[in-house]
Length: 267
Image 1: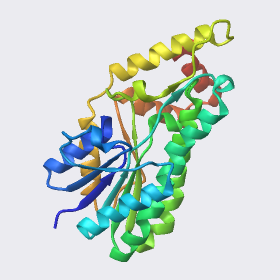
Image 2: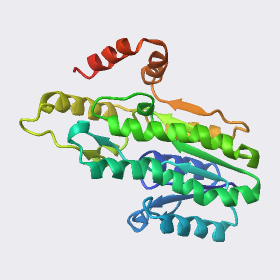
Image 3: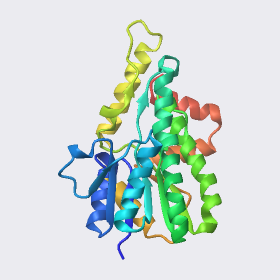
Image 4: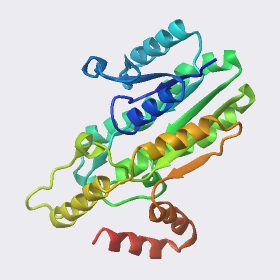
């Protein structure tokens, strides 16, 4: 029997790549979008879902269960980028980012758990970020929301292990997607004390995305995880230096690591 997979944020970027790859491998794939009608050419089914709306999440999950009779894998991929000096990012934008990157995934997990528990089987993969392992300048809110999802996953997987439901994190580095176009950018404001340093850092971040890895690398990694009987807690997917930065974070003295980051971002 083909496994049924739900991917949040399946209309573009990493989510679309994962969905297409799994569809080609014979999985029954459902992606989500706030406006699925815009993607009539999608290779897999898209359902309407708004991460900020609990009713919308329940309706989408119930639709899949009524149609397929089961749900085997949840991939919490939907997320939002945000950049800017923390002092200058509006509080509403900070809350909106946490709603998408942390509270939304938690809501979807809560919606699927009763059904996976009744099946005595399931897998939940949370797409976080290598940025969630460190506080990056001008990406602090993003680092915090993704880092929080990493820690939530660590706790959650222990709570649900006895139900034969597996959970893990997959932390990508920079991938060539449209995330930069969709993220919130605090404006580079004339006369701001952060004007020069933030402007330079923003150009550097956008260049990293443009030069990022092919999203199919993430798709292949997720496929391998789904095939694994006992998945690890954390997976990091990206180029060597991005993954090695986490090793350095764990081994270097804090101030030396901070100096390294500041040099990288030309601060």
